[in-house]
Image: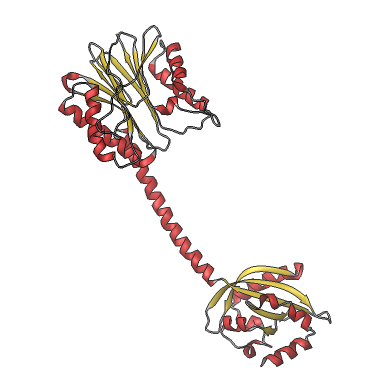
Length: 395
């Protein structure tokens, strides 16, 4: 059946040229017109013929349901019920082709009426094969990403467990009782706190803060920890010498990177309680006397891993600790914790106030008080890793 015969059928059905004009906006899509009562095909455009691999003459005059399998026919009937109620519908469908394959389409159906009041259905079919292909590829990529995410999560949990083995929690050596806290922002972080044993039974309290967060900072922190251990095993002439040697080794690794670190070290004699203090770019180390007075010590050096030789701007400090005295080492995640939307930091002075007012309270409780103060000050918006060490001289 040619196009003139198709037009004749449409005219017999009472469809005017004015109604045909309504299809112009869809002529680049698959268009067909059906009788609503019996789904007899009255018109197909060339694009629809191309999609189903059949000429117009093979389609016009036939019942469209002949092309559908039982499942497709049942689904079409369900969608037709919506058309009967609302006069239109839009749904996804599989368009059958002569070869037996199916083309995924979006079908937009609306009800039109002839001059004689006959009810017809104007069906617009949009081929979404490409969209389906892309969606399928995206699903495959998403599955791979989820698998990678799960593996990465598992690896990070393992890394967190390993890193925590490098954190000294609570121990006693001689007359020195050591209490620590470690709270990374991302599970793993660039802070670490560790108590090393050096030569001649000296104990080294060390706290490190690598710039940045996450995996890279964590790897550098672990590297610094391991390097500190190696340096101490060979022997040093005090904490200042430790920092010089640590900087020299680290500079070779970090000089072209954006990472660097601050570092605090205290050499302690666990029996006499003589202490030597040095730090590089780190917040002041605090000496809390047994009666509550607090003295702060800045380090002789700037940050480590960035410059060589290491610039020096101060001196190493020596302290004789007495029973009840404390040394407090911490990272700037505590003192630089800000109130949201402001530049108001917790600050060293507030930290000193907590330590001075609670010099008689056990170290575990004081640690919790300090961290709670940070949480309250930041309204729980923690932005940096927090590490804290309190070394208390007991009788």
